[in-house]
Length: 164
Image: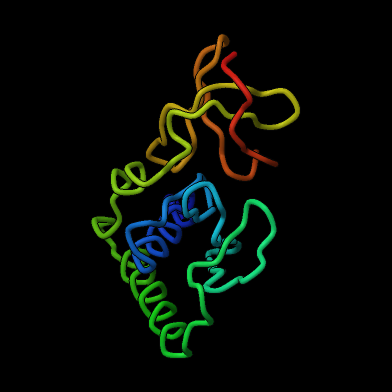
């Protein structure tokens, strides 16, 4: 339970790996192709039990702005099953690894497009995303210094319109 803050990052990284190299990550739980959201993960924990889910737009012919599907045509049931098995199997293997070596936070950081971006959070927070700490929190920096944000503290995180 001490590493539960990393579970959504692990779930996202496993989904991105299962989907292929074009998928990037937006902290803490979105999957992107370019600037468009193609899916997301959700992890909830309570009483020593964690539940993880993953939703992917494998096909979305007329998606709204900011969203997309991965394929031009509906995927076969075997493709859906292939992805589900790859994601769930990789996630469980890494999550249940007692040494924690099956998950690399550095791998997540390399695929995370949030890092280096100016972001907003809460009602008034603005700063540059400069890192992800060992607990999975987003480290932001602004004129007041550095602070770490847990995913449950953030209502929305999006690129800020300009530098502060």
